Length: 369
Image (cartoon, rainbow, N blue to C red; front, side, top):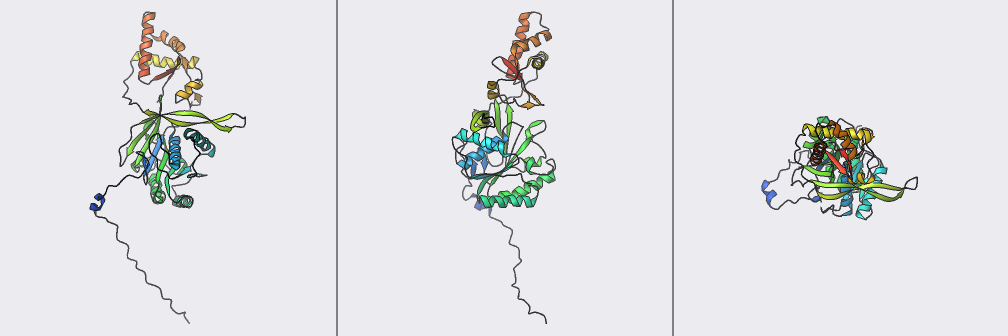
């Protein structure tokens, strides 16, 4: 005997109407931007921060996060107090030292509203993106910012593929932005081009805001390349400030780190004219002098100028002006010692003004980039 039929409650399967709104409702009252950092990052936005190695792109992101979670201004820019999550792709040792340096900078402890992942995420995969979103909701139901540092470490795909980037962006839109947070993706600089990020151009196209950190002789410049719904801020100049931490290493020596120190608006750099033949000779002579007599830059030079990191496996060196002069004079065709001296002085001045060379306390070095 068949069992009695089970009565099933009928369900209305008619889809809900596609949401539409009268345009006139949008102009009834002003729509104000919900700033996380005034004039820089707004809530519910998708942002990209790219930069060359050593330019401080992760330092900027961490500095913003520190100020947001503490509810303190960032160099005069008002910050909204909110929870921040960093999906980190690097080790905790470096992050710990950077946070300790920020505690020195702002004279306060790191807020408990800042959360850092213990492993990178595979955000090209929907299940992983959902897992990250669920973990964030469980820990802090109302995050203001999620930082992905870096794109490369959190996406097991091809950053040059527009299809892979589309999946990555869709997962950010579908799983992280619904949390009510802005998303900031930290990325690397393009190969041979400091003005764009590495990989597919579709990365930039998807962003509401785009920022970069570039190294120059005056330090580090923070620029805004794209601001979808607001006016981009003028480039800002920063220097890396070394600081001792109240931690000791295995040899009982003080541990150190750095933080970003704001030094004002960045100076506008005009297009640089081409060098004359004699100026090119004198510039190349500087490299010759460094090869023969170069020394490691002093601690003071490293503290005042950016760019003295490892390049091609060798530490950048400086050379005294006397050695540079000795390398130049045999290559000049001037007839008298006085004209050679004047030619060297004039070329040195112009090379400095063009940003080709830098000096400190009698020592000189070329500027790359």
